[in-house]
Image (cartoon, rainbow, N blue to C red; front, top):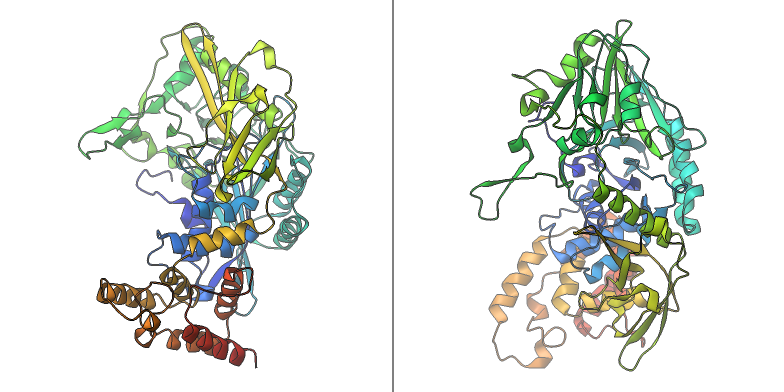
Length: 608
């Protein structure tokens, strides 16, 4: 069942059924990188058959910009407060997805840890379908071993998963947000939960029963494993002694697959007679930069084992719990988690069917392990890392605000934040900077930092935070991003950023071609640019300012007419784009009078 060759990409979970497009999307994640936030709308646009958009150049900035503008307004990502990774760079187009992300503040000492997707698709006739995906994977670029369960709406399904507990779980999450969502986005989520509640979600074969297991919320469940079982296997990258001792008593096989450093922290005495397994070193390897020798991941948490699976057999049935919960007391004692309990026949869903053995299935890329330590080992570095995480989470909960004012040659930005209590005498050194511009300097948090003469791109709500402490001779650091309230930023910031991104006529025309669903125009523009490059034409015969493109050669009429004839949303999106690009005087100086007249005729005809 867990075949190493049977791998799936996260984007597979976002692929709509044939003829459908994504109408609503909600994701939850513990950690988050902002690049992945951008890739999710891109995947949705690439698969959006409802609008007949073929994004062959899906990695181009224009395609990414369009995917964000189209899908970000109905995509919401909930993450752990202070769980956002610091991006290596922050492109201007990322500003159009800033409203997607919201932070959850669990109770002190607890973690927001679920990893799910709720999706609603719609076809051209208004028909809807839903999908629920339950993962062990965060919304990051990690290259770890994870699992994903996908349940699609199917009115004919024999074996189904009740979606009501999932809807209730998400609705309860809205009460734990650090700052309220805008009314429209909050209503979108409630509407998605309500429509999901009445659906039939099909279980994948060979499972015959399924039940959502929320944890850490008012409707949450408790430890779902029995006291005894015929056999069991647990996959969990993190463990603690209390939860290992709660695992079922069994005279049959007992297999525990984890990480070497986790086993060493527990010690062999706590693990008793359990068969211990770890991934083989090469199962955690990635190619080196020169594609020659593989590089073994070692203790890098962005790779290696990250799946969380509990499997056991009892009373003639096999059961499997999959999702976000590790085999720890925190996971089942206060963390916010969501997993799914699946059941089926032992021959198809049992421990051996799940893992295989040394010659088949997932176990063949593992090896036995014997801890070197007998007793649990204190890990002061690990403890310091957790304290830094708690410090950053406390900072996120103190409502950081960025105040914008006019500077000499741009905008000034001032951070206000009432510092929380230092957790357990941590005495960390902390610096901060806005992430919008890479060269913006970091400043000490305690100094009430101010940054001067920033551009519009620098007015992002994302604040990079870096903290460090010394544990003996070992430096320990942690970086994250906090979401701030931005006060007094220009109301038209996004429109002005859009004009900066589409400052050239050829960019606007390529974007229009993308909106109209006609990528062939992009090839035409490339040919025209090559043919006119370096030509000394009369400027009055060119389209736009300095473009070198003759309107007589630009065949955009046919795509415009086809879009008008289809009567879909593509022409409306093109109209909205051009309206956003108009300058304060209502003009479009990048485009020729000939093109604007053509556009006026087509648009007015479409409104008849």
